[in-house]
Length: 90
Image 1 (cartoon, rainbow, N blue to C red):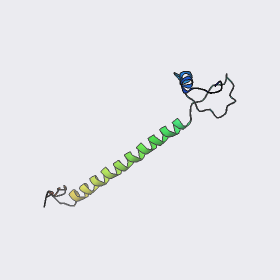
Image 2: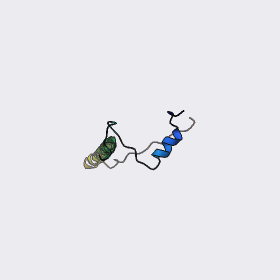
Image 3: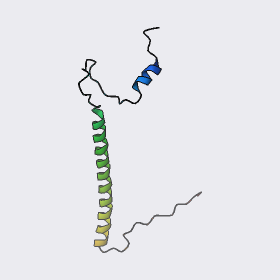
């Protein structure tokens, strides 16, 4: 079985090395390898999602504060929401 490569041999060869995205098999040895470009895309996506979630939270808080201020400015004194007690077991 001269042509069969063992998974142990492959693991031993790859141990301690960084894996890179290689577009072609014909790279010359002196050419520098470029890391996987998908990492930057994933980081950008995570940052965008965090910014959108932060914006939604900010809009929610500002809307709730604006409603409370509108209530106070109209002269009411009972503007704070009161949670109704929940009956257990009916």
